[in-house]
Amino acid sequence: MSGEMIEIHWTSGSLDEARRISRYLVQERYVACAQIIPWVESIYMWDNKLETAQESKIIFKTRAENYDKIKTAIEQNCKYEVPEITWVKIDGGNKSYMDWLQASTFVEALSH
Image (cartoon, rainbow, N blue to C red; front, side, top):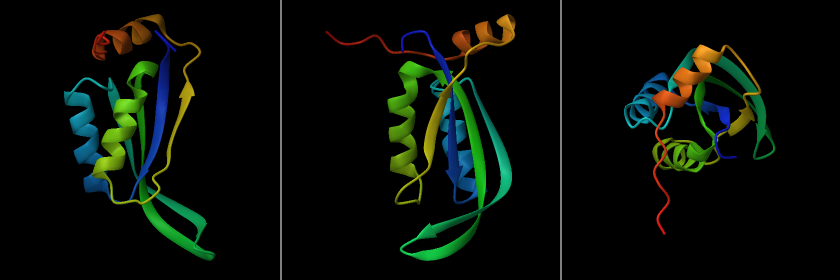
């Protein structure tokens, strides 16, 4: 996973929550960018009932090494019992943009 760039997809129950957690992750340099799509409608089964919810969709760009820290920050600060947190590898892209992603994210040195 070292050096790989990924997109993390997360669905938040509120726009305020999405903004608060996204700002934290960008300020801490865990993610280079957070794109918030303010309104999506989700239809799903929960506790054997058909549910419909208005949610916000967030896409983060980051290093694969930061995934666990990001996942933990979301889980500890969001209202959902089982938040959607998925990731996909970024296989390529505009080199100058990819360089910016690398430069804009921080990876802590591993403790020995």
